[in-house]
Image 1 (cartoon, rainbow, N blue to C red):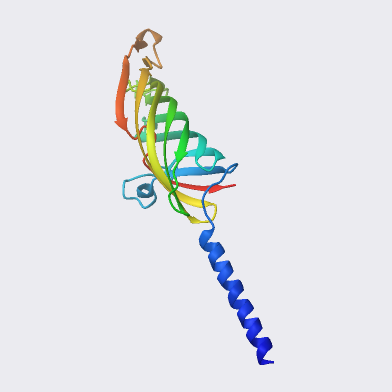
Image 2: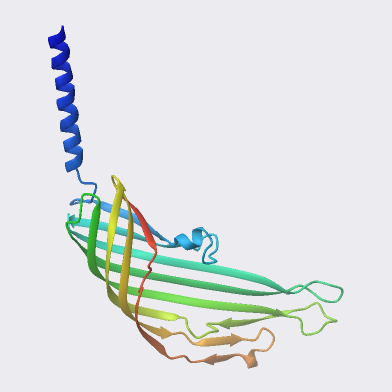
Length: 240
């Protein structure tokens, strides 16, 4: 009886030792054929440390496909839309309610390639390059009550009022790492450095009451070389 117990205990110990050794050798990282989907987010916005709004922490979505353990192609989209409305005149007696509205829209598409290094069973460092195509537009509207004895109003509209919106192209390099804190789920950080050229949209003013007062202003272009071509936010992703 004692012999049987000894054999069973020895087998259990051998099995647990083998399982532990297998877990130690198991890698949590990507392999050939894996695909990942991730979101970029700003922790400062989530906890309010940078004054971000409810959804400002979302910076974009990225998809990757690994041709082998150390090489991956990626494509991402950063999308933003903000609409703000203020009441600039309260309704009172002969006064009607007037509003000022502003909307901002921006989208950028990024594609590139990553080259991963050995790292550890949980850490996957990489470098790579990418290209950028982007577009942004701002529109501002303001109601006007020209005659206080008349409830009629008209709306003035400014398009690209700051002269900074337009079409952008660019490219750059990056370096970063992914850390797999559980299998198939990782947090990542990367630093980007790139250049971008923007052809600015014309600024336009549309008078809501008299078209003869409408006008267009031409704007030039901008060229920049700087870090953070895309985003320096954290990345949360998973393999599927």
